[in-house]
Length: 163
Image (cartoon, rainbow, N blue to C red; front, side, top):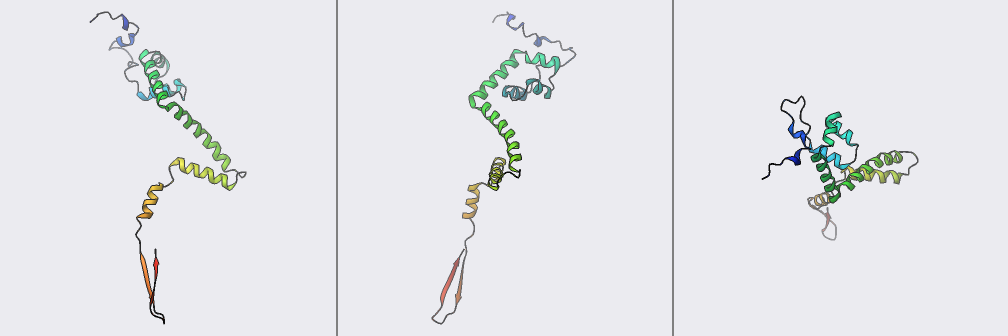
């Protein structure tokens, strides 16, 4: 094993003294910060501020190679599994939904257009009953039969009403 530590000389942040006046920037990097920076849906400075990384603290973190590497790896994973596309599509759909709703409730829309938007919103919100559950409930409903005997002059002929 080599005692040459020159490869770590650029990582001086590991050498902070225990008496340092502020917490070490890299000790508590929330995974969500890495995830949101990798998603690329917002400005990284805004994301970092939400997590309490601002000013010099954020400047140090965003230049720290392990953080950069973590963001790049997460971004590559998102691209591999299609998450980037789904995130952006979801963001676009959300933006379009408010515009679509405003247009649908205007007096210029036909009842069919309003119904189409309504059905889409109900579907996206998950408010539509599960079709399989509805079918199962209908099939498992109790069956009944009512027989009424009405006397007639030609002999009793039963009338059956099935339900």
